[in-house]
Length: 88
Image (cartoon, rainbow, N blue to C red; front, side, top):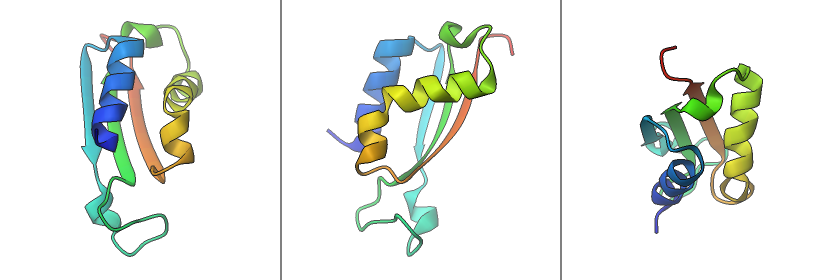
């Protein structure tokens, strides 16, 4: 399973998002810190889920970071997060 598939599976399972885009932007960072041959090091997330309702931006990011702690401790070097509740 790829890192992108793992991220997608974990977020879908935990958050049941209405919208989820997991974008591998590793090619944009070739040669920069944290980049590795084969990519899957830099990701951008756009996620909309009821679980974020009433939560601050920081709390939303903490939720996502906690769900992806293993990936962030391993292969993933950078994660840009846009997390919203439906209707925002």
